[in-house]
Image 1 (spheres, one colour):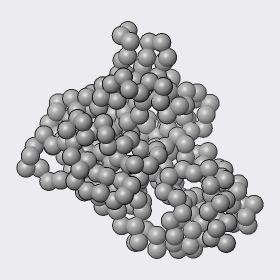
Image 2: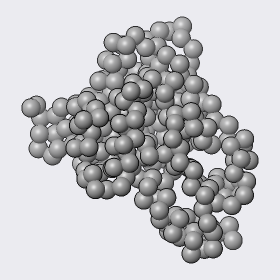
Image 3: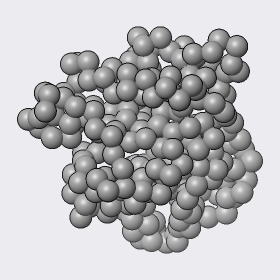
Length: 253
């Protein structure tokens, strides 16, 4: 084994892989994410872990064909990167570029139009720097999100956001609703914690599980995996702590 290897996962080996700081299948987030992945491989999703000879699994990249992407984007013919991360203590070694290169090679091999990615200046998503250095360009912005693309076919149409925030929020205009996909291993704990805290505040949340790429593309933000909505207002678009939720509800009251 080299010092670092990019390991392709499948339904047989994913349970033994670490990702997003989770290494144990006993963790609910890890277990749900593993099951989610097992249901996605047949759709062409690729999930690769960055494995260190000394430290084990220290990073990952996940991407899917545009028509199966779990992001509110229109990107037919492209590969769409969902996530790319390298654990903090291992950053600055070119490992992110190593993961990205594996995706770009797959896209060229599959004769895709190119590769697209949603980045964010906030938490839970990769920033734009790595992609800009690799030749990606911005095609649309919805702060703090930015849609970037690296085209292999110049005449191909640009990917675009398809977020319809107001329409989605109107659908959940009464009470507390949590929209959550098992794509994010942090979501299960967040849902559980928010449900417990909201109960103490006299509210009963409605938890809506996002179970398909189509449903993820109907979420109210480009994050496409998680939202907390209260009386038609977006309170959070990424997993938050119980304390943060309590502070938000206190201010609303």
